[in-house]
Length: 421
Ligand SMILES: [Zn+2]
Image (tube, rainbow, N blue to C red; front, side, top):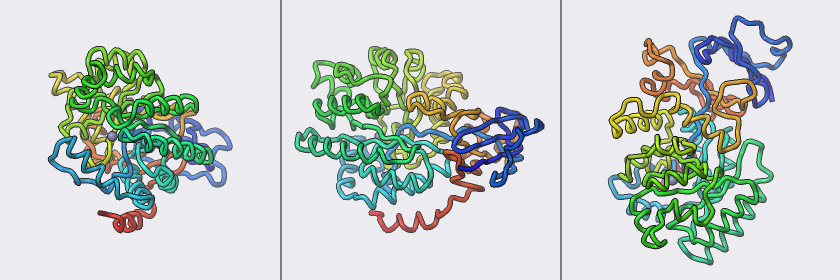
């Protein structure tokens, strides 16, 4: 891997030189300080970034990349009608479909500044191939979803073992994880097996939890009054290696448990709003209880896009509105939720622009009206700008987009179009 020198880039408000060596940030220093001797050697790519600013790549902590070509297939219907429709469509997808859809998702993620995505989808080896070709940092979970059918559980256990073995040959920046779809779609015995498998192999556990009021009511009816959080805790599932998507319908006791277990809760605001699942995500309460909070888009079938800047803006505005408190979800915490907080649970040094961190960097063009203000850069980025301000993206020390050009964009769309249904 080579070296990249980003000259005159604004980092933390200072015009800087940002040095990348291999897949890591080697240093960030004021632009008027002499560079280390021997840094700019033959083959070092020097890029003038005057008028641009460095931001850590965004981390989308809950998505289903393979749904990138299912936008709009279930508009204006309830969550339960919607998920039935999704499962019907998903009975028709295959390896090729997921490969092309994931390429489209990666293209969109690059254009909107996501460098790491925590994925929860079928035909995972194809998602891995697509993400590798696109140069992103994927966390790809084998998904358990047995619809309470023991034969299906057995088939999925075998397939999980095979895919885990295959994952040992992956490149060093792809992570394998375990997903349990949800408590209402996976047998208890399977939930326990999947959790034990993940823990004994040091893998993260990705699960949908308390997404809808119905999920909570059904769980309480079936499991002696236990909420989904209490039920999962009684099975020993919850811990600091668990990434719980949604966590929207929570009791005080649920918040306490999620905090004490150090669970990562992922807020997927646009999906929740669109499916009318709910909107009172208990950000302050979960944070104060000790949970780690991240942001996600969910899949395109519910959120319609994978844009993390849009997710950040909506999350903060909604939190301010329903709490009647404009200081709710302040900017620094909001940006951490979309970047560094993910690094804590994924055990990755990401989400920071500093020496030693992985080189996942967005180069933001500030030479436009959205940034022409006395406001802070962060405020302009989240509340004023749109993701087209992201000029270039570096992931794992390599450019995946430069000057808004992603190599092969037209071909990716043309190939994927053949698989639309
Ligand atoms: Zn989801």
